Image (cartoon, rainbow, N blue to C red):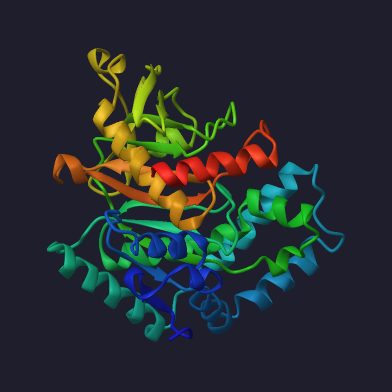
Length: 347
């Protein structure tokens, strides 16, 4: 079963990380946890990207371009050269089409997803899924409708292994640009979020393992993840499961779905100062993230959305979960073990 181009999320799990990428594998694993809502979707494997490269001869063209145009390599300080190389390599990738067989494999899964969701052209997100977590390195496309647009966006995600961020990362890691590793793609039904954001199971500033931090804004979560707004912040006591701090953000803009794609719009003045979550919703989000932390056995950085089409006690939808990084070292190893034992006992 581990030699396919496409998998339904419910078919796989964390053990498929190197096959479909971390984002898809972690979401698939989350489906195994009782009470977790994950949008329906499927994973395009790294094998599919390799097949695309082999069938189109992209690798050969890219190596030829690099030999002819940058024989001495790309200088880290040369941003202009970096952008020129990135544009040229992405144009090579995006000028190619998938083979009929690969195209049909992906398109048939999209049509089946439409049937599952009861929609003709269901809106989906087309998200990159690398084997290792590289937040913001590759690209994501939101609110994509129709089989052909989905296929086009998959190729654009594949081409993002040659965007300027990815090329810079390859240079820093001494990886030849022509050998940037292929990636998976995660296709998920879009959540028409009333509010969305992130939750850290350990407070990222203080390192307090008994406090979770939520950042939230109206609309889709991209405004929070990208840092384009100052979001609302909620600190939740994970032991007592109570909101202990609420800090309204300067929420001037939000990201919303259009007919195709997304756009940024002004938030009405009377909504800017209002908190985007209720205390009950904040507590429900932390309850979800505690389940993720318990299942994966490490602190988690979780992206979530509030779907008002679902019942109030089930309207928190998980969009991504990954290990939390950058946690301040505030406690000794013994204290951490004691904290984990207390949290496990009270969960």
